Length: 411
Image 1 (tube, rainbow, N blue to C red):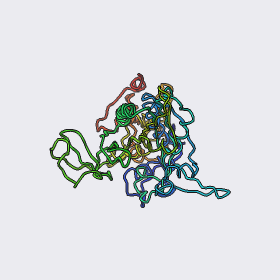
Image 2: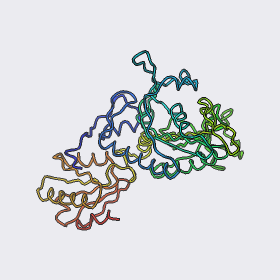
Image 3: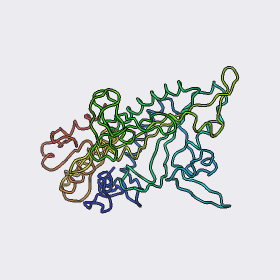
Image 4: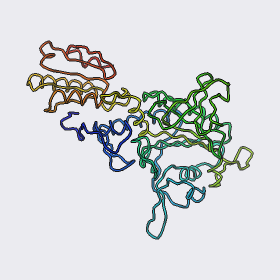
């Protein structure tokens, strides 16, 4: 992609109404545009990142055994009334249509997926089954001020599993923990499993938390036994670990995912049962598992940045290489164009800064955008048939022969 043609531009101005680092950097670098509080347009650079995160999530959910579906975002009131959540969920966006019919925009999809799966499950032979979707969710958040971390419209992967008994649910639930850890590791996040409130469903649910000073959550961390707890379920706010008795520390953290054993809460509401081997009706057990790809994107920016801009992990960077031509020397521009075409032909995702702007702006923008590798061609390097290569997460600069550049990225 030639940067002169890229839709979206960088800016030096810090958004006045944004308090989070992820929103500041993503807006300044031209990855997203803010429509209103908690609602963002993904520009080409940002959308490429979001799609890469979603692709990683898909791969791990398919490996786990999930099958992708896509459910409506516009949902009928009756389904929410059956589970008593029409009036219980305070962030639910409610709408009135023609004929005084009432609807809600999906903030979560238990009310839709449960009767859906019921249509296709009758016998024990039909279980277990797990379906997931990646879809925008809508929540009327009172505090939509943390950029992509707390949106009113946001990308969500929600997976739902259905089982014959609690043992089978527990087995899948444990496997989902590893799948989630795989997702976050591939996205460059060091996530920790944290016990959180299970509400009326179970003793605990589990959150996946990334420790960072910019986080909103407080986690009681036990480095002795490795069992961590969200502040909300810590009795008497004690620093003594209830499992091993050792001292704990408190870390600020960002929640990037959660999983929940729902058991029969929603299947009972929709009279969802199956027939076992003996011909008897049995309740279906259910679990839900959520990851927000947009929230992951914001979290990565919060964790991976410096005073110059973002530092994207290779797995989710919009482009792998930022090729920068410095100066207006025709030979420099011609050589940069030739290298750009060679990289593209070799399958290397490349952003080529061919803009007619000052060298300082190009270098500052490259740091702000934060692609993994920067290649610079200038009259100084061209005289020696070299290109200057620098990784975004390193201060070291290498001189590489132009003829060998594309081979560095060929696997």
